[in-house]
Image (cartoon, rainbow, N blue to C red; front, side):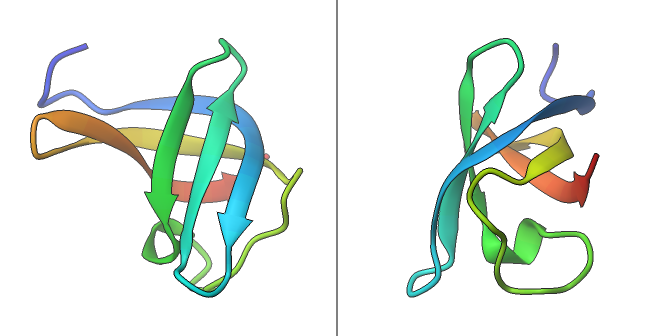
Length: 72
């Protein structure tokens, strides 16, 4: 995967802090990715831990983060 080619993955929201709007999603391959509440596709600012989602990996400051989280 290159910095310019996002790809979609599936996984489960493994943590989410409503107060700061940050969470983690664990992909089916076992890797964990960070996300901010603005990455939730439906515009809500919260998501349940354990929710099954698909998401895109996007480059951010030399690393990748989960974006465009959608129910799967």
